[in-house]
Length: 180
Image (cartoon, rainbow, N blue to C red; front, side, top):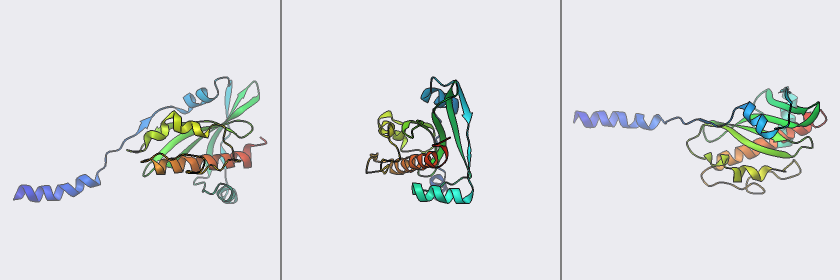
């Protein structure tokens, strides 16, 4: 009888303690080298936003900018702009997904890499086949899950939030980096 009471008390606690999974795939420097192998330097071009700029991003992108800053680097070779690389965090289901987005000087996606994935499910967003559908996309595209970006069953939140994040980062490029 004591065993059953102890088991009854401990069982609910095992449900509350979910194991944490985190896998780091690439560092920022590795992603920079992968996206822009010919770059001779990466110039820190971190964007700082006031509340009006954050409202403008939300209005244009349809999704809010949580933070007041956005990590971004300008890839250069002998002073020539090769493109931009953003590092961003979006929520999966419960945890952040850290990813890098490379954008050409003309505003087209060059690629996406998942740098760190912390969820227990949905890691299929790291597969090259899913990420490759963003290549060549720009703000002229819909960039909506289920429209021009396919969903992965079991990873809907990760897919949606990365897609929304890409649209938000491309909006930042358009508003603040397009002519830089």
